[in-house]
Length: 280
Image (cartoon, rainbow, N blue to C red; front, side, top):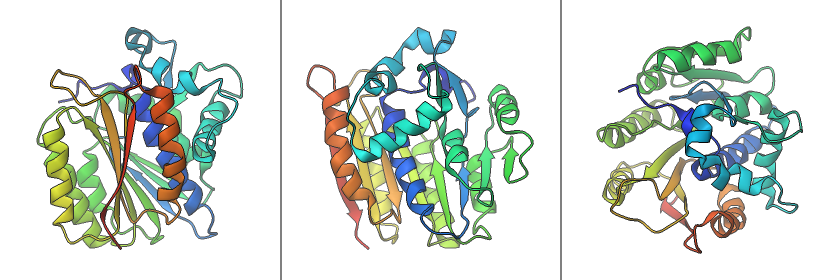
C-alpha cells in the first residue's frame, strides 16, 4: 500500500514525541567527534507546509507543534526540538514543519552520512528535490526495511536507525520487529528508534513481547497519549521503542513527557509511559 501521505499528519502530537526523542539522540551522538550514520526506513519527503490543503484538512498540527509554539518555558529536550522547527521556519512564524530526515540534516556535521528510503513515488520525488546535491545523503526509492539490512553495519560503526512505517498493513507490526532483530545481529552497538501508533493496543503488546524475547538488551519505551485507548478507529497515543538509547535519554523524557501529556492531552486525558523493556 502506498496511500499514506504524512502531509496530513505533520507536526501532530505523535511527531512531537518522535522528534523530541530523535533530537535528544542526535544531540548525544554529536557530543563525540567521530562521525555517525543516520538511516531512515520511511523518510517521506522531509518537509511539509502547514498551510497546505492536506495539513489544513486534518488540522492535527494544532494539537501538536502549534500548541507549543508560543510557550515561553519548555523542558530542555522539548526546547531542543523546538529550536529545530524554528530554524526550519527561518525563526519566523510557524508555516512549515521539518520531517525526521530534515531535522537530522539540520543537526548533523559534514562528515555524518544519511541513508533515506521512500517507496511512495511522489514523496520520493519531493524528497529528492529537498536533499539533492549532497553526496553524503544517499536516497533510494525502495523498501526501507530491506535497505536497512543491506546497509548494516555502517562503516562509521556509530549510527541511528529510525524505523517509522505507516502501519497501513497489520503485518508491518511483525515486520518491523523482525527487521530490527536482524539488523541488530549485524550492528549490535547501533541505536535503533522504532516508532509505533496506538490504534490497537493488542498489536503493541505483541511487539513488546517479541522484543523482550529477542535476546536484545537495553531497550526502553517512551509513550505519549492524548486520550485513553479506545475501540474506535483512530490513533490515541504513539510511542518510541529505543534500543541502545543514550544513557541520558530516560532522564530527559522524565522531564519532557509529563509536560507534553499535560499540554497536549484532550480534556485532561493526556498520559505518558516510560518503561525499561529489557535492562542492559
